[in-house]
Image 1: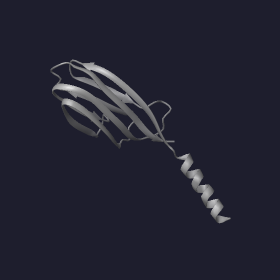
Image 2: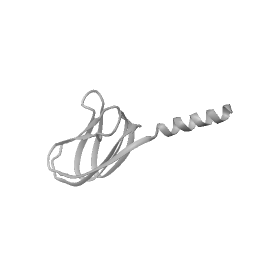
Image 3: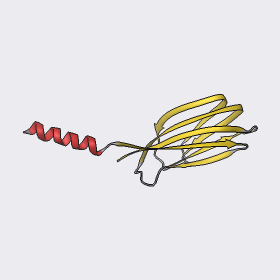
Image 4: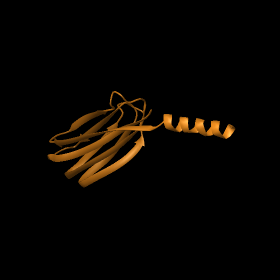
Length: 119
């Protein structure tokens, strides 16, 4: 009897805390320094992570800065055929992506992202 109750409780806990994602996609061209603000979807709960994919062909070195607008900043140098994919802990409802030092036009940059939350 105790086993049945324990297994039932375990199943309830595991199914009530499923990992929810909401995939979003952008495609853009940039000709100068550009800042984007990525936001979670309104239906999402507290954000615990972000899955971010960036793809583009950069003929000149461009600086990519990812920030929460406060104290978290990640910096990357983009040059040539660039394709990154990473998932990190993130505890903000938005993510600011800045492209800096853009001297030449960059076409067809693809950004895919998901704010990850627990529901």
